[in-house]
Amino acid sequence: MISYEGLTAKLAEKGITKTALSAELGISSRTIAKIARGEKLSAATLRRIAGYLGCGPELLCREVSDNKLLQLLRDEKSAKISGGLYHELQVRMTYNSNHIEGSKLTEDQTRLIFETNTVDVGDGIPVDDILETVHHFRAIDYVIDCAEEELTEEIIKRLHYILKHDTADSRLSWFAVGDYKRRANVVGGRETVKPKDVPERMRELLQAYGKKTEVTVNDVIALHAEFEYIHPFQDGNGRVGRLIALKECLRHGIIPFLIEESKKMYYYRGLSEWKNEKGWLEDTCLDGQDTFIRLLDLLDIPHE
Image (tube, rainbow, N blue to C red):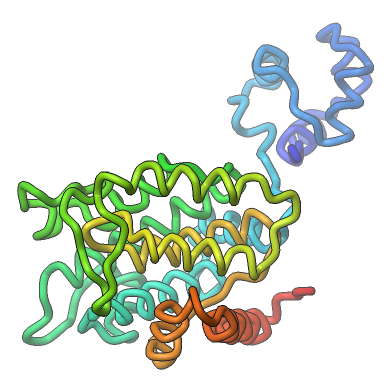
């Protein structure tokens, strides 16, 4: 949906009605009706209106998501609002997701980096922990920006690149940043999909998921589990997988789930036993959804 708040404000500022605008520029009543319905105008029409009003086309309209939660995140991100949902999602998801993977940064240290772009980490904190914290902030931004797009391999690889570029891993000749793994890897003693088979398995996963007509939270959980079983990247699969889950929840109007570091062992157990017992991971992720709901309640944000 397109919001023409900027156009309406500009017309009011100059004392011009939509009828007068239509007559002055020779714009049809059908086009004026599109503005009222929040439908997209052609780029040429927007440029004509902007030229007449003496402003840039980008000031006249903006795309608005029907998903109120996603739109709130986008508005707060754009306005750089402190202390809101965007702020807390960045800090809490980044801290927990990185800590699950072994980061030594505390939540307070993570918060300091996000809020002040400064570091006060004491001794013994790996540089990569700091880099990957900043990268995770940018990865969440990317998820918010592309949330409503169809999930593709390109998006998934981009998330991996954002997370892992400029790290120590990226300087290894065999480590493919932003691309699928080149070496076989084992997770928790379990063999993952061999490198040569990853592209086909990822295409199959995305094709099967893309055929769903009405995606539920359990569908997103299943997508996450199957992604982790494939383990397509050399490293960073857990964080990429949780970012994908965030994106798909926002895309389909589902309250996201936030896996806390304190629930790590339940989360790992759920992933490990997914093929035999799906309920353990589903319960852990639904508990993570409750965690997100508590955050919404703390910030007094309505939710269904």
